[in-house]
Length: 139
Image (cartoon, rainbow, N blue to C red; front, side, top):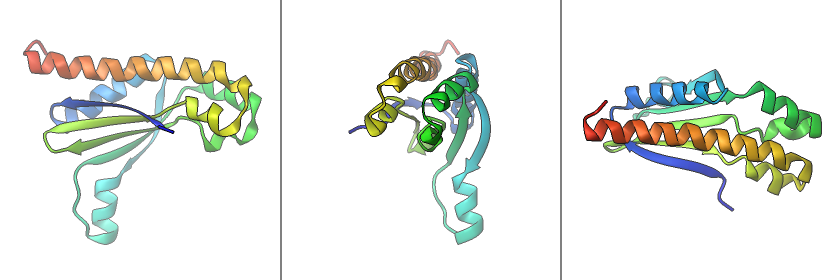
């Protein structure tokens, strides 16, 4: 079962990750945490890798609704958004909220998952559109 929603765009990593933050904010998600995997692996293991960020994004209203259905759902809330370099492109991935329903079997989570999916897809579409604008020279 796929568990991600992904777009790939061309552009400088730093610019794309800022566009991701903006697109998430426009959809009601705040970035509460950030893990710079590249820097962490370099500091802890002296391992070099491509830029890779894990953004802990949260939409409080959606999280509250899901937690009202199942207190353990915090384990599966679609909070992590990965922004990672892949050659000249940047891959942006979000956890597919529908996986919450599939994994738990709780149909009461379906409306929350549907709204979260709509919002995450809108954010990913905005990132993709910004990338296309950049390639078209209008950004």
